Length: 52
Image (cartoon, rainbow, N blue to C red; front, side, top):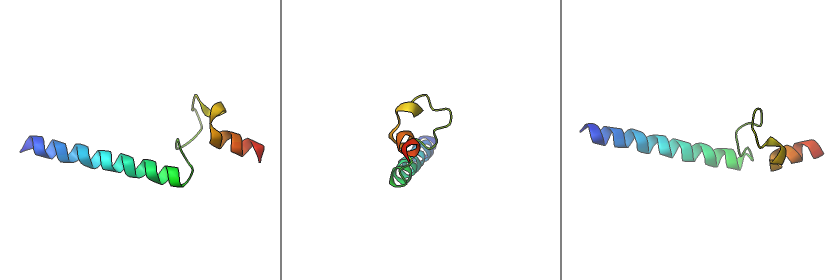
């Protein structure tokens, strides 16, 4: 019984992560935030913000 519960919890978390990534992608917020991101200088979102 416990292994099914753990499986359901893991599956629910994976579904949540996929939902969050799709939501971020639709909002054109690919990485969540750029603060502290090591690849912010090469990020398309960062380049678009600085060109405006």
